[in-house]
Image (cartoon, rainbow, N blue to C red; front, top):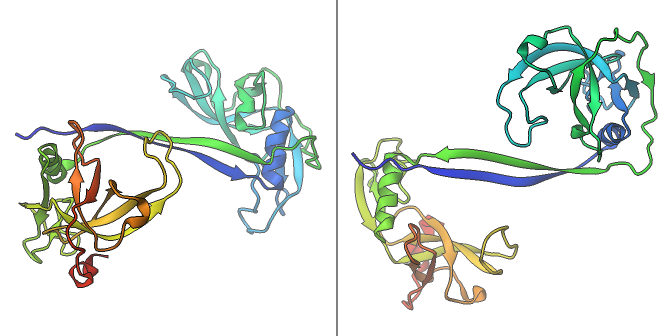
Length: 315
């Protein structure tokens, strides 16, 4: 049985958003220990606020202040908090309808165990010691013995000193990738400095890297065939922005390369030549470094350029 390959992968990036008047007032208000909602045309108070009425789709900006106390409408216990979650100890995720609001806000409830949480329980905001204008300014909710506040939401103009106008939120996804049989065979060949594809039994095209199925005919592919290693640059772009953590100086060229014998172009970096000398039709070959499984880059072979008709179908 062939080795089952797996690899841990992480996709992460900072998501930057500029804020409009409603979200700016809401987050700035949290920094000032004030919770704001927005009033819809039918008089409901939405917390957290939105910029458009979910019923009529009209723009809404009528802000109102609600109380920092509320009632749990539903909950779920989290016995093993993950990194960057609101609390390090087990806690409950709760939907809380703050007094004066008509909708519920999702956040964490600090409780000694699931036995201490129930729908309908009263809670209040525990503010973070240091607040910057983010939802994390609400450190969490905590149990509260007081009765529901009977006062309606109070109108608020949303004006604060030094308003928050934008936020940067880190987005991250951690997962384990399993390539499957077709890609595993391809990766095993790459470890031997060979490049393989799979031939479709119907259209006879060779696809690199293989997918285990022909993307055109939709039939399984099992016939392996070796391609390249030489190939032709079909098209390319010049990269001028350095990727975080990448040890490649800019500018550099990323290209689509049609390997000899393949009917699908793959993409790779072009090296060994100034970026402004890379051209369509240039003949290239892979360069492996050390014990790397993948080629580090492709370099020019010195062969005459390929004729356009030889690769125009692979653009």
